[in-house]
Length: 131
Length: 186
Image 1 (cartoon, each protein chain N blue to C red):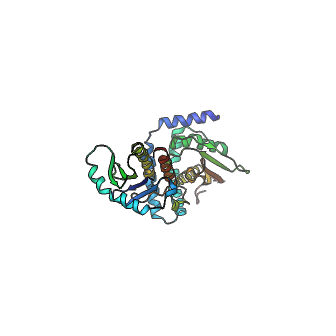
Image 2 (cartoon, chains in turn green, brown):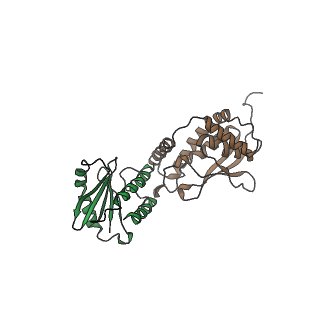
Image 3 (cartoon, each protein chain N blue to C red):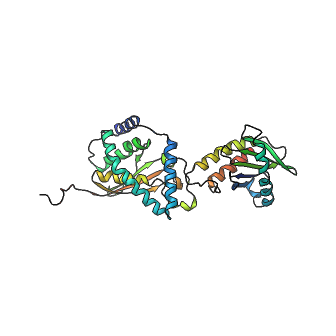
C-alpha cells in the first residue's frame, strides 16, 4: 500500500495519504518514520539531477521511496513496493499541478497542513489512476 | 437600447480599457482578503469590511464608468440592472453577468455570473465558512448606485466557493434619493 507524504521546505508535514484509503490508519506510524527518515537522502540526491523527479532515493525492506522536489523546495515522498515505478513519474507530475493549485489559494497559509477536501479527493483519484 | 446592444457596449468598453493579468488581480485580492481574515476575528466582520471598502471604490468608480461607457440615463430599475450586469461587469471584471430572478414587488433583483476572476484560485477553509469572499463587489454596487441617487442594499446569495453552481448578488432598492438644495439657502 503506497503512502504519500508532502513535506514543506522547513520540514513540516503538509499532507499525508495512504492508498487505497481503506488501509489508512494501519502501520501508519512506521511508514511516516520511514518516509521522513529518507529526507536526508532527498537532500543529497537532489543535487545529482536537473529533474524535479529524483526516482528511488531510499529502500526499506522490500519497499522503495521515490521522491520529487518542487522548485519551492516542497518534497513529495512516496513509499511503494519495489519494482512498481512505472506510473510514479506521471503521478508526481500531476500531483505537482494539483499542489500548485492548492497552494495558490490565498487562504492557504504556507507550510501549514493542506486540509482542502477537494485536494484530498483529487490526490486519491490520481493514485487510483497511476499507482 | 435593446439587449444585444448593451452586450456589445460592454464588450467594446472592455476592449477599450487597459487590462491586467487575471493572476495578478486574483492573487492581490486574495492576499488582501487573507490579511483581513487575519486582522478581524469573525468572518462576518471581514464581510462588513470588504463591503465598506467596496463602497468607497464604487463611489469613485461610477464616474469612470459613466464617462467611459457612454451610457445614457436609465429609465427604470430593470434597465439599471441590465446595465450593471451586461456593461459594468464586463467592463471592470471581464465577465458578463445576467439579471436573475426579480422579487414580487420588482424592487429586488439578482445578478448572476459564473466566472469570478477575484476568486480564481480561492477555496474556503472550514474556519472561513461564513466568509463571502467577493463581498467587495456588493459594496461597489451599493456605492456606485448611491452616487446616482439610488439607495440599495446588496448581499451575496450564492457563491461558487460555497459549492453553489453560480454566483449571485441580490440587489434590493430601498429608495430613490431626491436631490435637495443645501440647507440654509433659499
